[in-house]
Length: 465
Image (tube, rainbow, N blue to C red; front, side, top):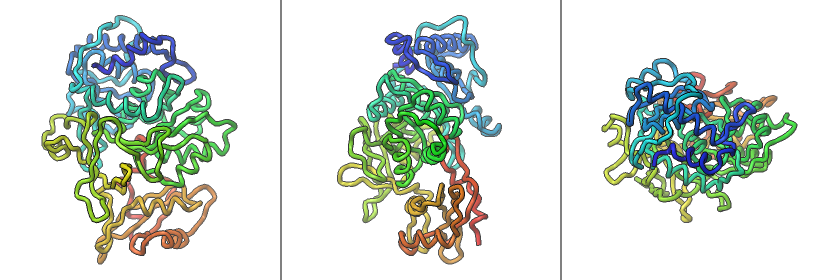
């Protein structure tokens, strides 16, 4: 059940069909499979064997895809590394995974090819993906062949992917969304990926128009930037849906995107430890604003430690949950219990219809004078203001209350509201203890490789006082 068979089967069934759009050129399924076979031969020549790790440090490009499926074809375990990582971060990941080979340049595209595909079981490791380290050092999550396949199959079914679809490949291929959903789900459906090496709104929108992209995979900040770019665009792509995750989607952001592009916005939930998407609303199914949908396939979800409102920590069990972290039994035991339930660190609840709603990250909750304040509630209120482009709410120290609610805000071009005006706006919409007492305006917010706002990188000094 080697994942490499997905590309090989596509090449056998429809060799001439487009698999990748890259810089105006196309790579067919047949050509992609051939390149993967040549890459596998090059890795074998570099003494890579079954179970060996192969680190791939390449941007979104056909070279990454060929190396990824080539390494899997050879029976190796892929260790994707974002090219934007700093040298100490790269060293940390290489020391932890001890790869036999490191690919940081394009592998040969011509020459000897490995035609056979190494046998791999569903529970064999396919990929080691290092988490972003939001709770400390990065940990190497072990994604299996069967786990990725299960998550990708669920995502493809939920989005109703078909061979006519073109999926935007802007999410980094070194990230679980870019791999599991962006590549594997798309190839399962026989569809094409429009490869974007780096997300820049205007250029990405032009690529979407050129390739007639029908599916957007991304995060809320991408939606915001694309709406801005669309205002000066002559033409828009035929988007069918936007599947958005990685962070809560503010209601106003979803509405503006749908008004601009026509396609419906579906909010989903996934983690590296879930091998991709685990919950969403299936296309055609009732969507509930603020919900990330229902569990897909054989995935189970429960709420642990519920309070009187039914809010508690979100936990998952199912075929896509990782077996653990690479050479890290302590981290594995802390995240996954003996019955296979994964603790996510996210707080949420399940309504009477089975829809999951996320309240916030457990560790990002602000405790102000004994009251719990979830940043998402405050951010939703800020995003509802016409002048607010982006917002991030965090807690800052307070001598008597413990923590105070504070907000960093990026304004839309030309907007000039005062902090007092925004504070009054939120005060009308939130409980007295929730509205932000401190608001600071900034030109941009720190973001990770997927475009997700990184609260841990926020300079809280601008909010002090």
